[in-house]
Image (cartoon, rainbow, N blue to C red):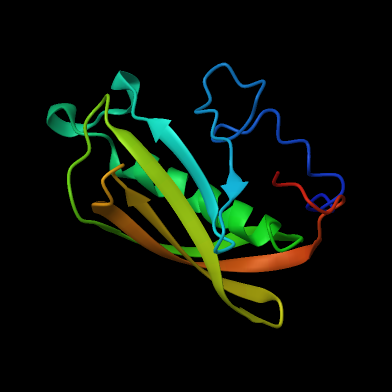
Amino acid sequence: MLMPTPRENHDLTGCIACGSANPSGIGLRFRLDEAGRAVADTVCQAGWVSWKGIVHGGVLAMLMDEAAGWAVAGRGWTGLTARLSIRLARPVVPGQRLIVRAWVERLRKRFAQVAAELLTPGGTRVAGAQLLMFVTGDLPEKGIIP
């Protein structure tokens, strides 16, 4: 099966992480901060739990993966995750507010190295990630992040 082109694939309304029309979605809304990082915040939901009421590590990975995609989009590119490595540093519980942010560390040919992290509002890092993103091309519209 052929992958859609970047222009064909930019209807994100159904995205589980950022889609506005996904009733099961998280609803992340990203912005670029003064350092050029993609940033969003969320409150962890009761339905995200795994073992003993702790938020599932896969959900935390998804938050950072999504932020990485938006960090690449903030540069005007489309990126697909080729590799994701996470480190979970502290347990997260439902009701906890988190800030997710990501930034492009390096671009080499068709790949971007991206870092991401999850922080409490007080700045405590609860998780971090390193990603390798395959850069597929320009976004159909520049300035996708407000």
